Length: 65
Image 1 (cartoon, rainbow, N blue to C red):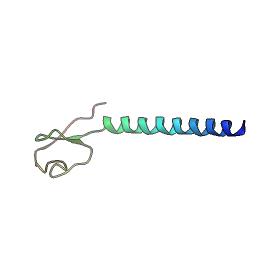
Image 2: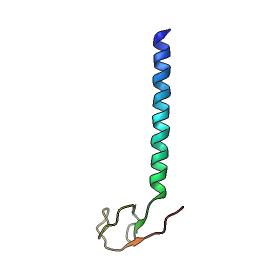
Image 3: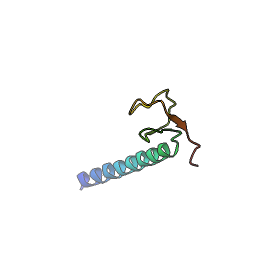
């Protein structure tokens, strides 16, 4: 019976870590502050040119909160 208890604990720990990671990812998505006008890429860090397509048409967006 000990092996099943151990596996149960490990599964619960995995679920908790996965939930925390999903919440962090959701928080990060809410903080997108910049958008490329050429390819619509969205990112949090200010760049002189788009990291996706290289265009210089970057606009800042108000926080979505």
